[in-house]
Amino acid sequence: MHDFLTVAFLGLGVFAVANFLEDIVPLLRRYHGFVMLALGIGAAYWMDYSFFRGLDVAIRNDDMGVLVTGLALAGSTSVWRGILHWMGTSEGDEPEVRASHMRLAA
Image (cartoon, rainbow, N blue to C red):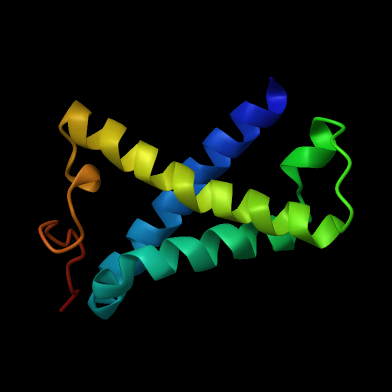
């Protein structure tokens, strides 16, 4: 059960980091899916975290377990987007619709 929660909350973290990066660099909003994939896979490799190790599932190549875990992290971000959209926050909107909250200091 802990492994499911780990993937869910790491997905929330990836979603938050991606939204932060998209606010800083507005050009990234056009490539939202690729940003999520890159951050999800990057986070899994950075932590060397495999969902399958926690479930004691034998995988022939351990790097594939980390890669699939990264894909699961990236996929869980769409769940968080839907939840946040349902709750009415601006973070759940599509990247093209969401207004930037960043202000330039004079």
